[in-house]
Image 1 (cartoon, rainbow, N blue to C red):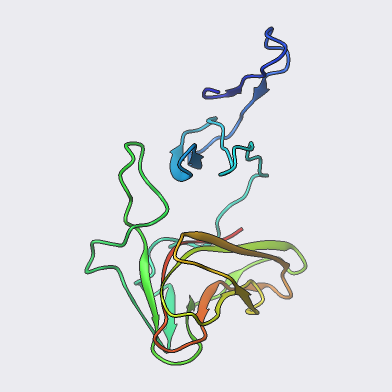
Image 2: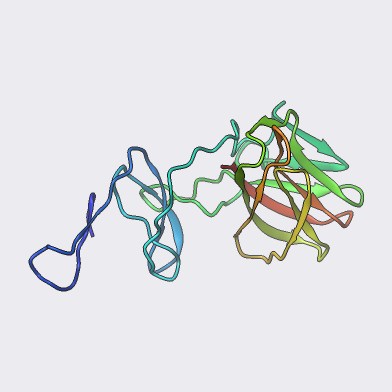
Length: 197
């Protein structure tokens, strides 16, 4: 592959090559190690198992997807830190393979401690939205729930490896939410890149 093209093995004429068109930069899986790398405009993207990643155009509605210490986010019975400004290792690396260190540590200080948007986003009722966030367990074994567009708790299994947890649902109103809840006091997770698309 190269920018703008995925070459077909057969025929050798190029007649079955795929054209890749995307106006902006994004991220892609770097095979074979599975880390995330920047993907330039028109550069192909792949899944961790080597498949071609094809997605419809989308826009992340979250203004601060990687900055959880600001007025856009509210904490309830939880704390968040970014390693004194240095950040924690995240699932993302730059073009040189250097970790972006854009993860934050979320800790529940009571049962069902959470972080979520301070002001819900304006969305279209009855339209499907994908809510997702990257999560990695640090300590504890309690349930971790993704707070979806309708403020419902979606319990998701996580491990000590980075996992993108997600849920797709139709918006029940014109108000959309995203967040993460920890069921057990003292549990800690790393979080990175919140998306509502």
